[in-house]
Length: 48
View 1 (tube, helix red, strand yellow):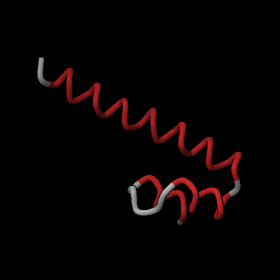
View 2 (cartoon, one colour):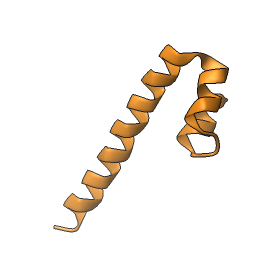
View 3 (cartoon, helix red, strand yellow):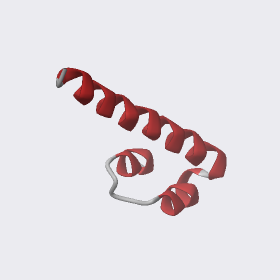
């Protein structure tokens, strides 16, 4: 649940750490960055 809330920008990183622990929160933050970057790239390529 906490991961989903974080991915939807409902809770912040500190709250995520409190819920799942630092190591797992770091992994989720990295995954979110990759997902966000992928969406931006797809939007950019769609505009070509």
